[in-house]
Amino acid sequence: MASNVEAPERWYLALLGFAEHFRTSSPPKIRLCVHCLQAVFQFKPPQRIEARTHLQLGSVLYHHTKNSELARSHLEKAWFISQQLPQFEDVKFEAASILSELFCQQNLVDSAKPLLRKAIQISQQTPYWHCRLLFQLAQLHTLEKDLVSACDLLGVGAEYARVVGSEYTRALFLLSKGMLLLMERKLGEVHPLLTLCGTIVENWQGNPIQKESLRVFFLVLQVTHYLDAGQVKSVKPCLKQLQQCIQTISTLQDDEILPTNPADLFHWLPKEHMCVLVYLVTVMHSMQAGYLEKAQKYTDKALMQLEKLKSHKATALQEISQVCQLCQQSPRLFNNHAAQLHTLLGLYCISVNCMDNAEAQFTTALRLTTHQELWTYIVTNLASVYIREGNRHQELYGLLERINPDHNFPVSSHCLRAAAFYIRGLLSFFQGRYNEAKRFLRETLKMSNAEDLNRLTACSLVLLGHIFYVLGNHRESNNMVVPAMQLASKIPDMSVQLWSSALLKDLNKALGNNIDAHEAAQMHQNFSQQLLQDHIAACSLPEHNLISWTDGPPPVQIQAQNGPTTSLASLL
Image 1 (cartoon, helix red, strand yellow):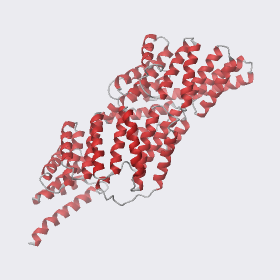
Image 2 (image 1 turned 60 degrees about the vertical axis):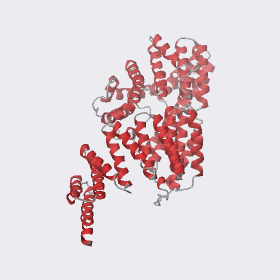
Image 3 (image 1 turned 90 degrees about the vertical axis):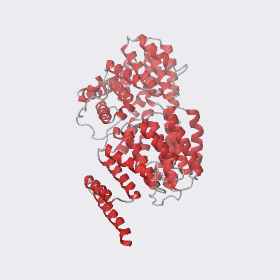
Image 4 (image 1 turned 120 degrees about the vertical axis):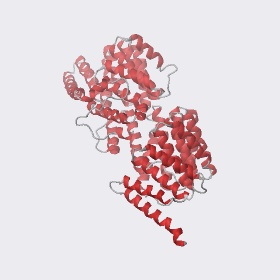
C-alpha cells in the first residue's frame, strides 16, 4: 500500500527533474522539456499535480515559444482547477498573473482586467500576492494611460500594506503613485505625498539595501520634479544626495536573509539598474545646464563605450535611427515615443539647416503629443524655425500667443518659460525693435542665471552683444560677448562659439584691435570648418533620409555606417 502511494510521487519527481534539466540546458531544450511535462498527464495525476503541471507548461510555452494559444489553454486550466483547491495560493495566483500578461500581449486587455480583479479580490489573506497583483493591475492601467485608475489602485495597495504592517511596501506603493501624479502634473498632490514618503523612508528600519533603494526611488522623483520644472540650480542638493546614496548602495553586500513579513518580498530595481538610472538623471541635469562634456562623461559611465550627446550631428542622427529601429519592433513603444522621435528629427533638421523638414517634423510631433511640456517645447522650437524663415508671420504670431511668458504660460517649467522669453527677444531683434529685445533677453538672463541654464545664458549674451554692436555701444557689446564665448567653451557648444567668434571679429575690427580681430577670425574659420565637416558627414548618411518621414510607423531599417552598436535607445 505504501508503495502505491509513493509511486506517483516518484514518477512525478522524475519527469519534473528531466523537464527542469532540459529547460536549464545551454541552449535550453524546450521541446524536450514540454514533452516531459505533458507526460505527467498520462498518469492521471491528482488535481494538485495536474494544476501545477498546467501552470508549468503554460509558463514555459509563454516565455520560451510563440505558441500563445497552447500556453493560454494550460494557464486557463491551471487557474480553473486551482480555484477549487484549498491552500493552493501560489499556483492559483501565479496562473492568474501570467495569464493576464498573455492576454495583454494578445491585446485582450478587457480579458486581463476582470481576471486580475478577481484574483485581487480573493487574495486578501495572501499579502505577497495581493500586493503583487495590485501592482500588476496598476501597471496595466498605466500602459493604457488611465493614470487615475492606476493611482487609485496604488492608494489601495498603500493602505493594505499599512494594515498588514509593511511600511516598506507601503512606501513602494506611495512612491509609485507619486511617479504617476508627476506624470499627470498633479503637483498639489505630489508635494504632501513626497513629504509622507520621505518620513516613511527615513523611519523604516530594515534591510539596508531595501532602505537605500527606497531613498533612491524617492530622490529620483524629487530630482525629476525639479528638472521637469527647469530648476537646474535648485535641484543640486537633491542630486548630490542621490549620487551619495547610489555610492552607499554599491558598497553594501546583497543580503540573502528573507524578510519575515511576506508583504516585504519586493525590490524596486537591481543595484546595477539603479546605478544606470542615477547616471541618466545626472545626464538630464548636465544637458539642461548645458554641460555637454559632463553629460558625455556620465553617459559613458552608464553605457560604457558609447559616443553620445555631444554636438556631433552624425552620431545624433544614428542614435535617432536606432530608436526608430526599436520602435519598428514594438507598436506600443512607437505609440509612446512617436512625438519624441519627430521632435528629435526636427532638432536635427534645424542643425543641418533643413528648415522645411524641421517644420514638417515639429508639426507631426504636435499632432501626436498630448504631453503639455513636450507640446510647449515643440512650439518654442517651431517658432524659432518660423523666425529663421522670415516669411511666416501669421503662423508665428499664432504660436507666440500660445506661449506668452508674460501671461498664462501653459506650463510651470522655469526652463521653458526662459526659452519663451528668448524667442521673443530673437524676434524683436530681427524686427529691429532693440529696446524690446533687450527687455526679453534680460528676463531670459535673469531666469537662466538663477537655474544655471548655461546654453540659454550664452545665447542671450551673444544676442545682447549683437544688439549693442548694432547700436554702436562697442564696450557693452564686448562685455556681453566675452563671457558668452567663455561659457560656450566651457559647455562646450561649437555653434555658440562660431556665433561668438563672428561677433568678436567684427567688434575688434571696429575697435581697431587688428591682432584680436585676426585671432577671432581664425577661431571662426576653425569652428566653421569643423561644423561643415560634421554637416557633410551627417547629410551623407543613409539615416539622413529620415527627415522626410512624417507619417505612419518608422520606415524600414536603415543600416548605420560605422555607428555605435548599442545605445541609450536600448534602455527604452
